Picture 1 (cartoon, rainbow, N blue to C red):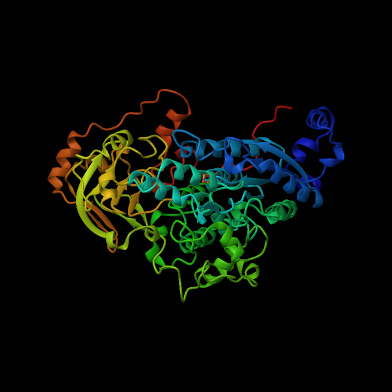
Picture 2: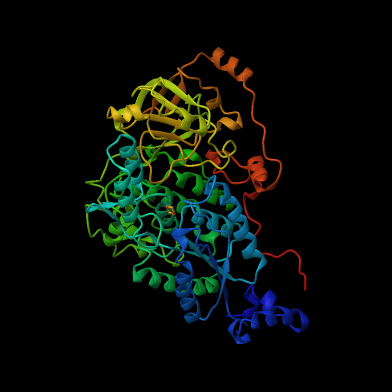
Length: 571
Ligand code: FES
């Protein structure tokens, strides 16, 4: 390899005082110059944090990546970026996804790295790191942290989706505090991210289906020895990618995004996938519209039987053949000619893949469910679209008209939802406003709001729910999310009032409040509008610049990329 081609040589390859400064300070780590002079320098972007329990094993994982890099003749340098722990961060980790993407982008560009390995795990760490890396566009590979082992409670398998069931059972008096504690103790049995097809798993699958990770990356459990093997292989491969100059912009074509959308449908992936994929596409200026996510375009069935849409867990998916087996089962829908980080096409990579367990990875002739993926609905509540996950909804509610029970914000919902006097019945439509990106801020996962206690006690299990928020990838129900524009962005959702008739019609992809145009105009004229309450800091920047959900909620000035060139030189 000619060293002049390496980006890192702009630092380490210089003569005299300029190179002296760059090299001498690396040597204070006890590293001889021949370790990094002339070799591909590979950054390992680490989201390790004890405040991100899903990523808490990443320092160990990074060692496996380093071993692979060294074996292939590269020089590994590990660097931290802000991490995002879904369970601990308030008000919501999503508020910081774009901030982390900026951290990643600037950390990569500013430093002498020729390529980067992204260590991703908990929900937002995957899209944030991919967004940042795409805006720089040097060779990049994703290594996911892997899911936890399947949880156990009273002899049954459990995962994060069961939390919603436990919460309902506690509310309905079917489960006591002691039982809840026992379930809590058995839920998270090992390191790794949520073991269901929630957002973290969907993001790991997304990285694999986009071609940005080695085949098999998504499903290997965090504690399985093969997770480290994959990390080491990824370390070896990224060094080759430098030699091949294989960048995200080469891999992430429109076809690659279409593959990711189709695979997400077949796995019953998270609704958050839409927002994150749109944001990643935006960084590469790949044209992608929210309508591209509508299941009716291809009618791909649900092939993977995992919670929350089905029964099993990520560990089972791994034993059944993982994502390569899923992609092989649905190959006729996929662009098999696109190249991945391996340098090979899916047609080459999937030759020997097959399902080892049809109960977990089914086939097109006998799918888990005929209907999967998302419906993108539009109407006078959501002129720019809203999202519903079909495999998680009650088919009986997919055409439904009911009276709105409106909550102006999350505090209002918490205050009144269990009020015995709340005017609600099973046919009502629960409407939650001001939980969008600007209004909350950060668009929290509260869209699958739990049902009123009095209805749960009557045995009601699902109702139509509408909000401008998101839903955990582990959640389920007939839940309309991501209403765009959001209430705080002068969206018509803000105009819905108690008692309005709301009509959801999935067949016709519509969601409307049944009101005369004159009444809507009257309410619009009286509506006060929204002013950013923040006066400083990142949150003010976020509210001022966040794009609507149908465009991916990136900050408007982060669209596209700035490449890997460093503009000015201090030495
Ligand atoms: Fe991290 Fe679920 S909380 S993946």
